Amino acid sequence: MAELSEQKEQELGDSKSVRQSSRGLWFGVIILLIIIGLAGAGFYFFSQLRDKQQDLGGEVKGEMSKQIADYQSQLVAIQSQLASLESNLAGKDNHFTQTLADFSHLHNEKLEATRNELNEAVIRLQRQLGKTRGDWLIADAEYLLSVANERLHLVGDVNTTRAALEAADQRLRESGDAATFKVREEIAKELSLLKSITVPDVVGIYASIQTLQDRVEKLALILPYTGKTLAQQTDTKSSSEPNAQSQGLLDSAISQLHGAIVIRHTEHEVKEILTPEEALFIREQLRVKLEMVKISLVQRNETLFQSSLADVKKWTEQNFTHNADDNSFVADLERLNITKISSQLPDISLSLKMLKDIATLRIETDKAIQPLEAMAADKKTSLVESNKPVESVVPTETVAPSK
Image (cartoon, rainbow, N blue to C red; front, side):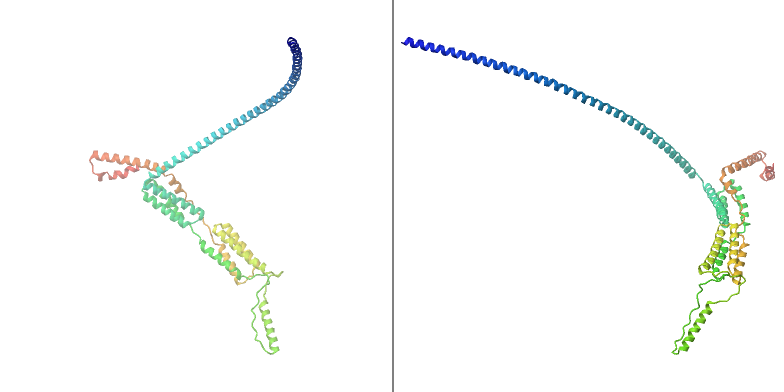
């Protein structure tokens, strides 16, 4: 029984093992199928992914090629801009270089001109410092001669001109330079010419014209004019009686009319009555014409002076009454008309020209002195050789310069 039970247990164990083995086999097959399915699905998904990657890579390459082309075009534009910028920089560099060269050249020219002026100033200063007292006196005389010429020909001041010439002659005398002897001779001639000039009394003539201007208000106009001031009213005594008051008013009115109405006899036909403005204009016009006479007097313009006086006389005869005041006024105008306000001024510029050319005068003086010095030396030598006294040779000294 025990063996049967063991056999049954063994058979049951074998059947269980067979069953378990079959189950494991099917489980392995299922696992294998699942793995194969997963592998197929993975391969499918991998192929899909590879296709997508290829499509995506083509798009990326196209986009990248476009971007690269854009970048290349931008690089070309940037290169062209850099080239233009380099050309502009080169042009500006050349311009700045040329400007700097021009400025340097101009600066050098100014520096050279300043250097030359400084050298001339130094030389001039050295010459001034090297002058002696005689040279300074000659320079002062030259200045005085130039002042004399200016005062004579520009202003007509004969007295100042004469004083300047005399002062210049005094400076030349004090200089002790023998070359100025001819200049002093010329100054003496010019002084004698100035003494023969008749100097008009400009101040007196001017005062006479001013007096005529003051007398314009006293002249009577030919034509009557309105606007005269009436005689001052007289105060009437108040009276209680009405007849006395009316009589006073009547006397006052008569006195006013007596002051306003003046009867005059005139040879000219009265065509109109002037207004106060017109009468004032006629008098002021006469004063203006006299002012033109004064201007021509100051300018020493003889022609303008005579024509202005003629204009004043004509205006007076046309607009003012011929009475005592008018006749006296016209007589003063005629007396001024025959007055000479200018004179013929001589030329005194020769002495100034000679003094400016003092170097030539010095050379001529030296040439004139050298023969005399040589003759004096020869005479001295002959005196020593002959042992003759000086008194016996004096006549030969007087004769020798005439040879």
